[in-house]
Image (cartoon, rainbow, N blue to C red; front, side, top):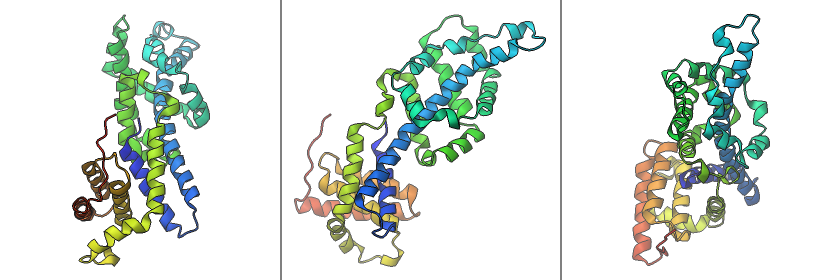
Length: 307
């Protein structure tokens, strides 16, 4: 499912947009934007799985095309369509939530048939596909491995696919690594996924609470940050760094079930990835000092959390 790190990124981006709007955006609008970002991640995950199913099912289209030639060869008339009956493929197609998400996203309208054909062509000339077809049985491991190969080695490395995903999903660049892991997890344990709940209610609440708290408790958070900026040139502090630190302080103060170490490490990583080259060290120093002071003053209200 969608990770908390991904939720933090989306909250960070939303809060940045909210601040940049300079009071022309309401809190309600900001929360709606965040909800839209989470919905986009759910749609992207479903579309990636949908691409796998479309390429796998193209074997039937290819077989029909070849058999309808004016002078079909023996090979054209006896195309092995084993992939079309892949058990994991049909477990996905028959999933009650999958078709609904595909329809909701109107994925049929954005799918390029020529791209699907080209991807299938790459699959058919691979040794992995030949090995899959050579086995008469349908072992679950083989069924999973051919779809994993299709996704990891055919679909993801394709430059046209990358361009297509970038054009259709604004969150592709941010979510790509997480999505790859999620799809692989799905192929290993499809029964544990609900396409209608890719972003769980708990994750949605966490994101909404974090954004709302960061907006409503802005001055409280800044009161903890400002005194530690005395040795820093305020004009040279990246605005994104301030937002990242505000979110970190929010979690330290108001999210009692999130361990302090997790909070600090997560926001250091976000600063390194999304802000300047010095941001990770800067955010680390500020949040660590705030954490120590809160602990010394007895202001941390963390509880041990067991799921």
